[in-house]
Image 1 (spheres, rainbow, N blue to C red):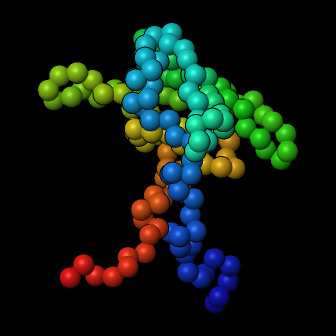
Image 2: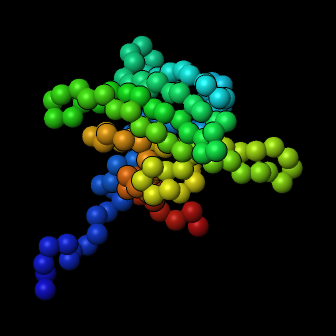
Length: 148
């Protein structure tokens, strides 16, 4: 009784959030025309002022394959050393009822179909928010009272 992990679960207020993480929405790859066979480009993240780049990732896509994918190449700092990471993320398309197709990422962690993959601070790989245990900032706000 009272052993390790038997207490209350970690509160939502102490979880990392999606907003604190680097995010790659599938729509950003479409917008930058990277979801074409042989597509290649770079995504950047900037600080709040928009003056300093805080991170970047090189993206290469192969969508004409039987199992389409994107390769992500980026650097992360772990234990004081800069490490080069190459990560392959599989893609999946669904047919839309009004015609056309919608692309999705297949999460490298759990295989779920997701619209965005994320990497919170201190992590090395992109995955879905569930795999990283992320919540949204709006879920951490306390209600100030009743609207009634």
